[in-house]
Image (cartoon, rainbow, N blue to C red):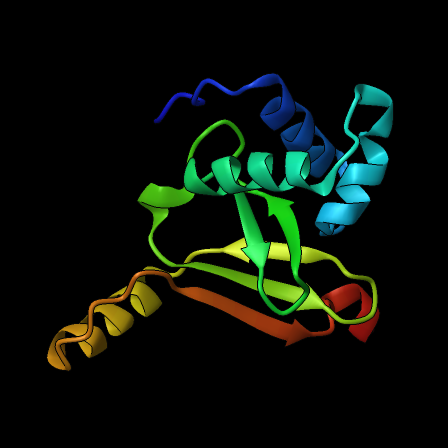
Length: 133
């Protein structure tokens, strides 16, 4: 198990907002939530987000242009392979999951074609069990 990397005050504040959120947040929503903590400019949020992404503590949902805290509390996701997300179109709930079979299939495909992946994000959009019922 990996220990939590040392965070700056701004990184810790941004991570805290994402951990307390029930839904993905855009950088501007994060900025609004942190104005009372001295955040005044989007650049402050984006710098913190970039470092948190680099440390594997948060994820960017490409299709929503929003961010979520990693489901693996206190550890970086970097060691878990491909990260996948199921995103409910109705309630906005996001479920993070990993599937080693998918990891192996993607690795086999890229290796067979000599492709060197830099980033893999899988997002499945639809309805969660509660909203589909």
